[in-house]
Amino acid sequence: MPFKGANVRVRIIFRGLILFRLPETGADKGLIRAELISKLPAPSLPGTLGSGGVTHPPTGATPPATGGHAHPRGKGGPHEHNPQIQIIGDAPPPHDSVPKDISIRDTTIRIKATGGSAVRPTDSFINHVPKLSEVVANATDPKYRLAKPTTPNPRLIHTVVTVNRGAIRVKDVVPWDAGANPLAGGEAPKGQRPSSPAELKFLGSQLRAHMASECVVDIDDVERLEIDAVPALGLPNSVTPFSAPNLEVGPDMVEILVTNYTARRRKAVPWGMDFQWLFEAAGYPTTELGGPEMSYFEQFATQYDSAEFTTDKTTLLGGGTVGRPFPYVVTYSSLRSLSPLTDLWDRPLCVEGRD
Image 1: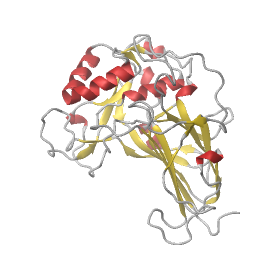
Image 2: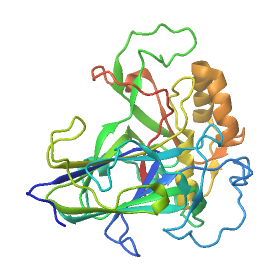
Image 3: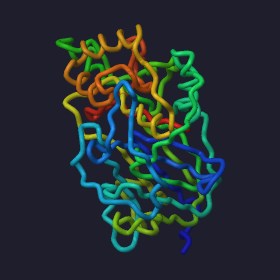
Image 4: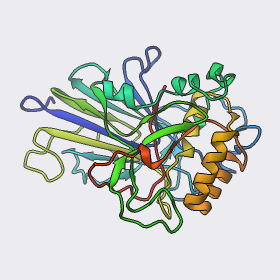
């Protein structure tokens, strides 16, 4: 049944490690396809990132969208991501609107709106969500600039979320709370700087910019909203706005929040080595990241927090310097002087990308 009244709005919020695609061909042509990326630790998904890059056993066809297998939350390694979805709206049977673990891997959640305008990337999405091919085209190594995605690895895709309508935009770029986590590390005094949007640079590429940490799909004038997912996830099939005023959403509004974060860390780190998995999922090869910039980064990261850096280098670079480009905060000079204070939730950088 269509919504009662006019101008119903749907807002879908994406946070965490996500690879966005806007397919121009295939079954998902004309949709927003958000791939929630996470690597299972060995032995669930064999392979390590070392001098030879990531090696996996041959993979077959992509698992069916309605299939998947159970994935116990919190049973993986320190970098395994645990996606969640929260639907705030009125749905039969009574829906509690709390975040739900997407506990089944290799599944697709399809958000379908009737009405509204066709999918459209906005300028903020184009300018602040780094495109993998552009990162590679600006690679430090001239040979890597010619790299093409030849061997996609669909096993890194935990969940796919598709949206059939709306404009996708960037709401927030990555901030850095230098007041709580001074980039100088060690015993540097806290509280001298506010949280500020941070310009990031890719190690292994000349590309640098303010990069998205949260993307939003806005769909206006929606007549009906349906959600197609495997029943085991416990999601409603259809959602409508609440009939009475609500603390969470405005009138005539349905909101869906999709997140893909790791477990909280001891402290936030100003780098996001797990971005490499977006390149791997898309099929890009590894490259040698060693050189002057890596030497600078290792000195900076070790000074900031040697324990966190050692853990990341071991688990995400195999202890070596062969990998794929990843973003990091360059210096204090890349922080803007004024912005609202923001809680980072003690997480590493999760920069969203597009392909």
